[in-house]
Image 1 (tube, rainbow, N blue to C red):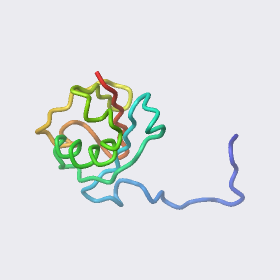
Image 2: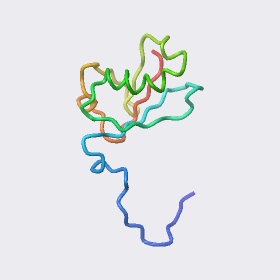
Image 3: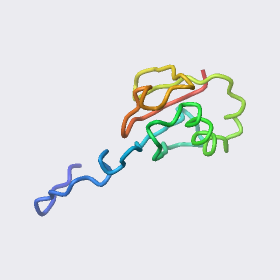
Length: 107
């Protein structure tokens, strides 16, 4: 149901890209995982390498699920499109931008 403001709301969003400087906001969602039923969000440097993002960021949270370490290969999605990230490329080089959504599931 739409909501109508009672006054003229003209404030800039606080999560716009300019506010984050060299960082970006990345959302992540483990598809069909009952342990993590909702997505999560992280503020990370856009020049962070993919291997560091997965090891330091994903591993800290998703490593809590015992199945995480059992998975040998993941299927990755950027928004709805499948993509194959290179461990040595940065998030920016892989095309991730402010408010990107990364979805993943065991391959």
